[in-house]
Image (cartoon, rainbow, N blue to C red; front, top):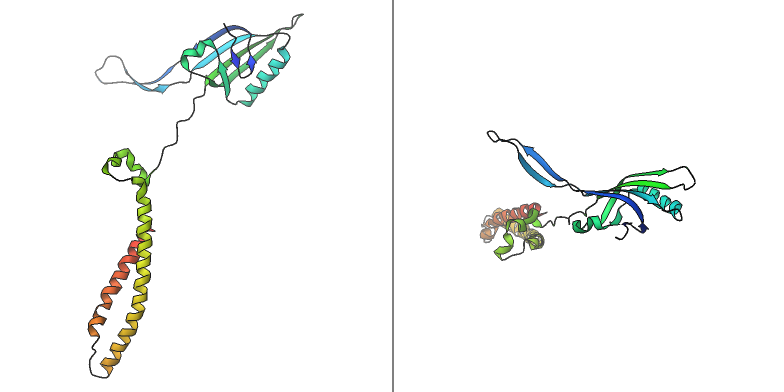
Length: 216
């Protein structure tokens, strides 16, 4: 059987190795039901516990490497026959202990506890209006993600219309002044129908400004 590997450290003299898997259940008591309903929340991380000896020729160097990895607390790669069916490779060192026997052999014994460190799931993709794709709107024949571009275009068009309306109102102000002169002369104003449309144009300008503020 090949020796377990902890990154680049070959643990040749492993004497004992144990693997544990636990489910994460919450017990829910149901009135009138004998026993309890177990609601599964997922699975806890796989754990591996092993102990062994460091061989004399590399004991000091291997001990140093193991101590550094345990102190760093970083993710490590673990391979061993006992985790083959679990598809576990990335783990962290939860616990490390070393014991040096005093005597001629000066053997160094160790115990390591490893825990599975699964990768995070991919980040959720956020689309316009908080993710319309989740509600099946992708089947309606349009791309919800493109709605933001459409709203930007509407806002730009509204701004352009407001600019045009402002320019038109400046011209209308001049026309209104001419109408006022006609009234002063007592001859009436032939352009009064145009002046009557001014208020409608002003209301249109107000509506577009409100739309622009809503989209902004």
